[in-house]
Length: 334
Image (cartoon, rainbow, N blue to C red; front, side, top):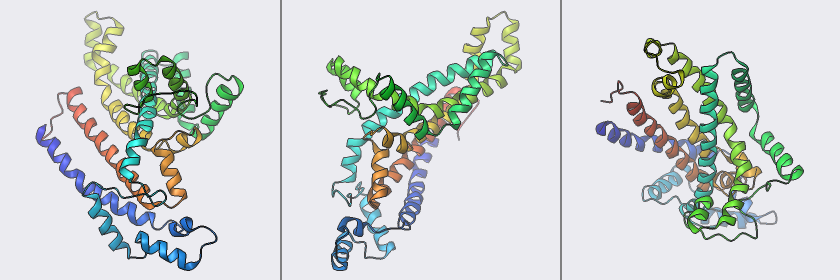
């Protein structure tokens, strides 16, 4: 296992290099010039040329890439063209917001999705099974921007139960420790801040959880039905074990391999792909940051965040491989 883990870490380097090459050259194919965006509408060609020289955009792409990689291997993601601030520092400020949203959405998706999948598998063909699978189909099919806007209109505008966006109300004061506002509120004993943070988190987290929730429910149901048809399950029933005990102690763990794969992939998708969700709900995370960077042709930000997202996917796949061996002792890594 240790040898396998070390080998996967070594494989990380060429994968990230390959991602950096693709991202760097593809981003420069996007129409538009960041120097023109920075200079403004009334800038002269001389002003634009001066900005391009200052940013190094007048150099050949291969030279720009080599300089970028030289900084990257020293842990420097570069500086934002628009704000001149270090990308790594701004990532540290924005990551907790995205992480809090992703963890909450994933928690909702896992709890509800697993429960729906298990109940559906235990009662196939029932009304509960049909309702769960129809709900899963709707969850997968509904675009996040449509669901988000509907949720804002219903819960924030019509019912006025929850705020329409942001992380905290303007009158809420919270001491920032980890950047995870729910956790910081609990640690500080700030229950008013906790209520405000949870209220702002509720709609975007629920909206973001719909797609992974639906996928988890369908995969859990399918995998559990396959396991329930195995001989060892019939043997467990033959020994007189109760149905719930058979499902929880024997069937569910053996059915978790495909579910764990989906969980790993969906967490990466949630953390990296919440661009629309964060934009709709004015959530100050990395997704909204990337959206703004694309609009302003801020190449270093887009490149740095794409590499970070690639690293997240690689890390989650690595953890999934390790969990495989724990869930199924028959799996051996050489």
